Image (cartoon, rainbow, N blue to C red; front, top):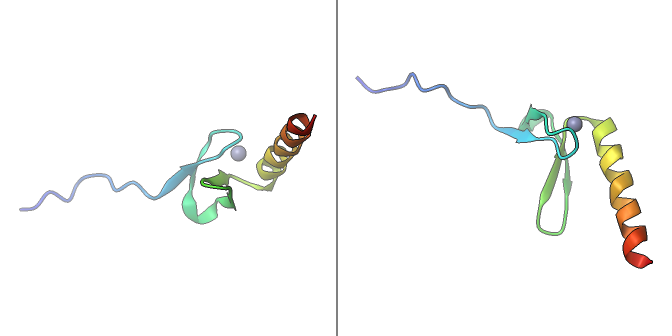
Length: 61
Ligand SMILES: [Zn+2]
């Protein structure tokens, strides 16, 4: 008998903003330079975008 009782973890990703685990299929994704950002929803995506933009402003200063 083969062991097939291992719980199969669905592909989950961590939201970049609230760190919630979400199924990859429902995650909002945003490709960065060498990293793909994941978000549980648009509100987190927008939040992240705001911080990204303010980071850029700070870098340009
Ligand atoms: Zn989130």
